[in-house]
Image 1 (cartoon, rainbow, N blue to C red):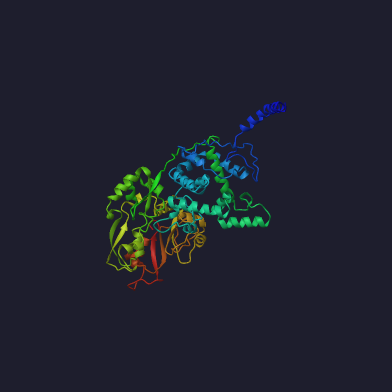
Image 2 (cartoon, rainbow, N blue to C red):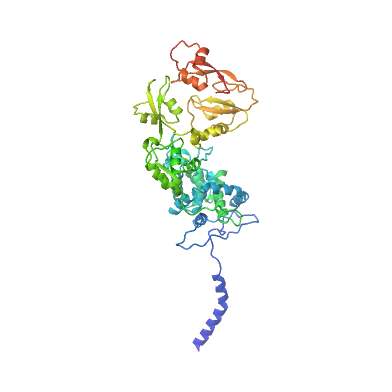
Length: 531
């Protein structure tokens, strides 16, 4: 009897609870992009649906499309606040920008995603170059940051990115990605796994974020990213990444088209053992120079750095033909050599500049023990093997392209003197410091060298005399200027610099001495349309 009562009671309870059990079992689990409480509440009425639309992937399967592989690696917390919503609103209204950065990212994204996955880092980090550089390998900011990951010179050097006349590792796609992920991993440890603080520190510096945290703690305020008092750029930096990551992973919701990117390597790293002309390398790989520079933007000159790194990034489909042809290429065809007869008054620096090479390389190539040279002797100079127009993305070519861009007003030229700075030169010519730096493809913090020539654009209606060392008036064609002789100067070099003849220099000046003396002043009549 007790058993029968108990059994009937159990059946009754089961009948009552069964609908609730079924309802509970059918509730979806919370995904990475569903709402979680955040410091600020979004007020916009068009709140996006936070349901994660990522495909379910079995442990042994691999997504065919790179985007879905990337989305499956997302780890950052869901954020639902006004700052993120503001960025979502902006990006969703500019689909052409998202289309452009996707196109820019195509050659690099698989490599970056693979490196992020290898280190078990949040997948969203692979999208950080969109915020930093729009995936442009030649991006250069007013703060002297360069490359996909926008390293400044000092931070680049700290993380082993070599920077010299031949090569800038900050633009090296392979090396800079390794350095950036090393840096972010270190910042994550510094801020105890808080990736939002780590990302803010990548933008503003670890010391800046630590200082802001200490300040909040001292005032008994929260010390999370959203509560810190930071400059506006850093306040927007993290929300931008979160917004981009969200919109791309919910592209259908925002009517954003995802560019199909195969889940397979686009390029691979290949050893070249020693220096090679860039155009020659592109020929061996059977690719155009534009594609070559797209994958190898770190090289400043016409060849790879003679001291290394000795590798190139090339499309996977072109590796075999490159390696086969490189193996049969004679050493004397890797770079071209020219025989130069030293002229009176020439220095090693002048010769190196003429041939777009470095004094050090000339010294090594000619087994010199110093930089002393004698007129009448010959030097072997390593030079570009092809027309200079083919090296369209070398540092010098890019700077010239910026400088030659059509502008309003007159271009005049200023020779940097000892003690000069961007601020002093800009103030003297009544132009902006950033303008002056931009006209010369530089940043305001870059170091100026004595004798370096700067281009300055002045308004056409200016009637004031130019306050340059040449005292030129842009509205007059021929101008008489005073030039102070420097160490190493000769009549020949001065004539070349100002596009005048040696005989004219002698005619304009009473020269009693055989040699020029540093500090001596010369009169030069310059045609500013030719100089």
